[in-house]
Length: 79
Image (cartoon, rainbow, N blue to C red; front, side, top):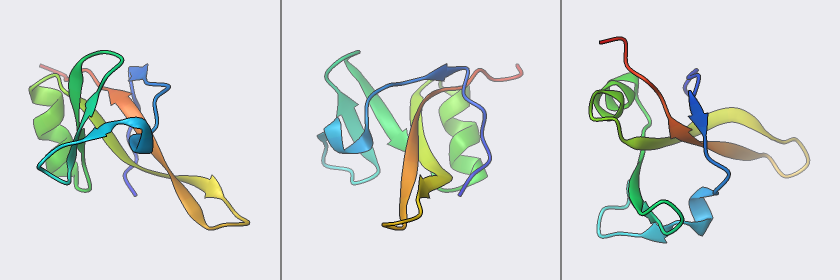
């Protein structure tokens, strides 16, 4: 679970994105961009530096099912 604040929060879900050859990357048919799944702060830094859309476990979820929410969106870098 990463503690990230998105500057743009996407309304798509990870499961609604098209799978690609890389299991950590999906394609968004809505905005025609690839979305990278980030599980480490270093991966988030790389995605932000490239101005790419990203996904990560938010820590929020449904306590009944134990499912954790995946957040999708973009972050702006400090550079």
